Image (cartoon, rainbow, N blue to C red; front, side, top):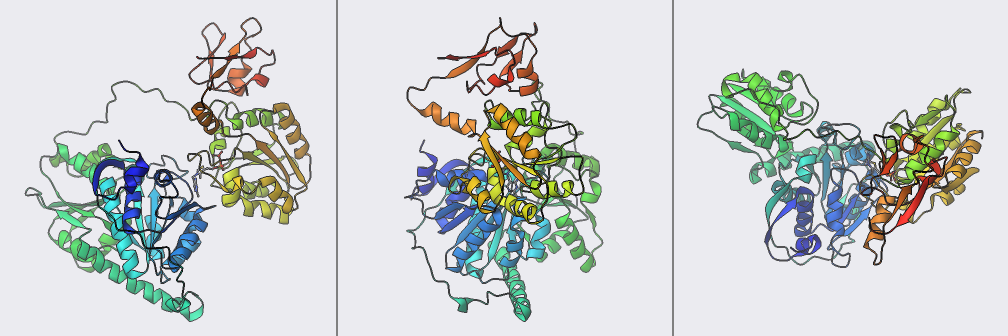
Length: 617
Ligand SMILES: Cc1ncc(C[n+]2csc(CCOP(=O)(O)OP(=O)(O)O)c2C)c(N)n1
């Protein structure tokens, strides 16, 4: 099989099984998208992986990881003002960061057109919440298409691009986790030779200054654009009704992945309600909804997360004077989590018991899968850092976590990071905790990608308002948690940055030098005002992946000298590398499949019973 990059760049039509995130990249190529920007976050990072699989000299568009989602949106917007079709993509909570810019987009005459691919995460599979970004789209006055599958992700991106270019506006492609990650055979089209990158910004295309009465004129224009988007949605046929010949007056309105769960759930049904599948969720297409409503006695609205469609559809029915039975979240006591086929079948059984042949059974796994807590990788520098930092802290001290691999420090045996909010929140939260607080010293952790993303304003505030905190920057040289994307720290050293800000107490060391790190933190905790410790070690998952590819690479692993080991288990209980095994006879073993032989664990043993062995496992 061809490599992904080659496949995506093929000039002839082809069929292939691709992930939703990958299919979207082909759509970018086919539509002539010229500029793409992102900040990584699940469920969309594989879009970047697919883009990067195309060698830069063959890539038909410019791509960058920006420092955060807001900046990424601004970069894509600026490029579109030059006449280029542009795209920005990021995860659900990324919209919170981008929002100040995002809400302005619909006011603007975006000459080249702009597509925003947004990955919502029902079930909070890899997010700190399961927010429903659909709540924002009305306020931002943006058109939103919602695919249910990889094939639709590809097709709907193309519709989104067409509308964005036609109306010189922004269109959102709302993906959710399993649409991003599902794989499906998709038939791809051909594409034409690319137009060159444009630099045609002209203020006459504006207005671009939304101040005073201008802001109101611009709002009027955006309302008109939404109106015309409604016509586009109708003309293209993005919303479709599936009429069964045995619906018994019942209908289901749904969208996105929930549509597939509905189809699964109906497999056990004795009769089949009609289905209205909405491919465009903002604005809603009133005509098709009204004719669907009037054709049924009972309607069930099935949507993951909040009751966004339900509220609008109920208002529509009220305005039209319909007295139809409309059910939705009000019939579902549990608003939380994904609408899996099981869950949807459960809703059917509760609402229309006569329809279901049997009560849905929860999926039975062929074997019990042991639960495995999230944990840091073997050799992770964050583990060494937490092990060392814990020794410097007193019982009373407060530790504030931030988002990243190092968040896992909150788990035993480290128990560090007692509060977690969102990216870059730790310096600010720590500052608040430090006010009038003479008893407890406050320590904040912050990752290096997050430092640039959203950590800087909090840090500058700490400096400006003279807060008394110790900030520990967990510098591993990459955006590790989302899959090792580059960040600004590879070009702009954090230490120089801190010095430039005028911070006087800056200390740094490699986290494997554990006793040194303990001492640096102890010293820093006694400083009045802001003190910073940079706890540095490259991400070992990334590092070992590179090492293993080198010719002549010989795996090293650690050994336990059973004669020296006195079975006090500091390595297992305090250092906590998953490599260590506590045998039934209390001796310590090594899981050779996990051990990377980095030796970061050696200082954890007071008996010096940990040694090294080179060679094949
Ligand atoms: C606003 C926002 N954007 C993106 C993410 C996804 N995300 C979670 S952790 C993380 C990486 C943080 O990297 P870094 O600060 O370097 O810490 P590391 O994982 O490398 O330890 C990202 C981008 C998020 N949670 N919130």
